[in-house]
Amino acid sequence: MGGFAFGLTLSVTAMRFGRQAAAEVHRYMEQAVDYVGELVARHRID
Image 1 (cartoon, rainbow, N blue to C red):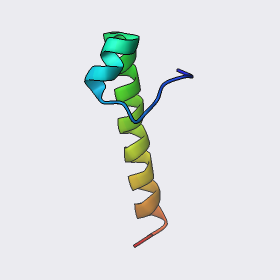
Image 2 (cartoon, rainbow, N blue to C red):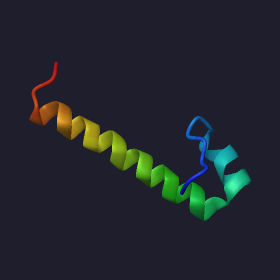
Image 3 (cartoon, helix red, strand yellow):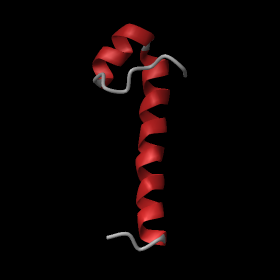
């Protein structure tokens, strides 16, 4: 997915790169946030 600007809104990303790509990027970013949350919990970061 190289070349995506993650500062764009979902609707702008969809217009620029297509709905399928926007959905994939959205899922990727959600997984990234979940992973960071898991790391914080695992390492007891406050």
